[in-house]
Amino acid sequence: MLQVRLPLRGLQSSCRCLFSNTAPARTYFSAADQKPEQPAELEKMTPSFAFAPPPIRDKENLAMRTYRPITPGLRHLRRPVNDHLWKGRPLHKLTFPKRGHGKGGRNSTGRVTVRHRGGGHKRRIRTVDFHRKEPGPHLVERIEHDPNRNAHIALLTSKQTGKKSYIIAAEGMRAGDVVESYMAGIPKELWESMGGTVDPGVLAARTAWRGNCLPLHMIPVGSLIYNIGLRPGKGAQLCRAAGTYGTITLKATEQTTEQLEELEAASIEEGGKPFTLQERHKLRLLADHVTVRLASGEVRLIHKDCCATIGVSSNSYFKYRQLGKAGRSRWLNIRPTVRGLAMNAKDHPHGGGRGKSKGNVDPKSPWGKPAKSGFKTRPKNRINKAVVIPRVRNQGKRRRGYN
Image 1: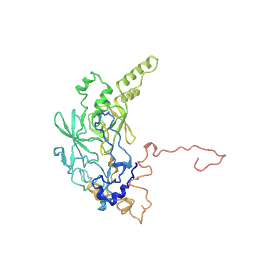
Image 2: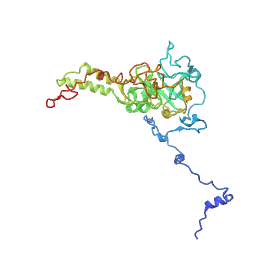
Image 3: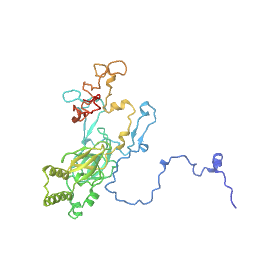
Image 4: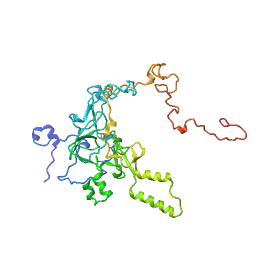
């Protein structure tokens, strides 16, 4: 016989004592709180060299921390969620106090050369290694916050020498990772595993990992890199801010260089002319340099022996933060920026007058230099150039604006 289904919801609300030992009632929750069931045994997969994707730019799923507005300064405060950062102090021997290092925007003579600087919290400057010359594996001990930059830094310990150093952390780098620098050359073990010759596929799979530092000619095309050097033997200078990266778009190889030489020899045999000095210089320039496209769209030729680190610079959500109040900006050594229109006439060319008026004056800088109207805002080949207007005949009548 079919049994009558009892109304459990009504019994739960009226006779709670009968269901005291049962599971609690279902509560409302969002889809984001659901966690997929993880299998008992996770398969160990070997990650590829391209496992450092560009940062996610979906503003709807930003990992930002908000605060309950118990004070006005917390109402609009937004911070990236970085729970993996080290909570303690930095390594003391790798820091030194920031005293007299231009905190007020003044030069050696005491004059203000950079405006809107001054005050700020007391800091210690972290000594960051931008050269990465020491070979061998390095263990990432922890990820730290650096008050002198917007990207995070990682504390490394060499497994061979035990020496500690700071580097700019890559996005996704955590404590326990192992990174290595190949600026001193290919290790002997890796060289023997490739059979004494350079195999591009094996070399990329073994070396091009997130956080590893390599010369540009060892990095495969299409990889995302940061901490890019501009001169051989010098440290990193480009893509050091939070969330920045570049992409290798073109790289010359030994085979392409040999093909160019064969092409020149074939053109001479067919009766053609040999390459000129300009053509040879251009081909040699392409053979010795790597084409890198920056996030701004700029394309640069950088020498193939310059250093670069695989991945994206850490703290990519930094640009979405909100300070929340003016005092937090003062803690960061930033003074207020006053508009020239709000100043007096003696303080700025736009000052004075009644209301929102700059006194019928062309836009100028605080020192009286024109700020617009073509002054240092257009290329030099377009400044003070006479525009040639063709002469047009219209049935013997001179039109206005033509000779």
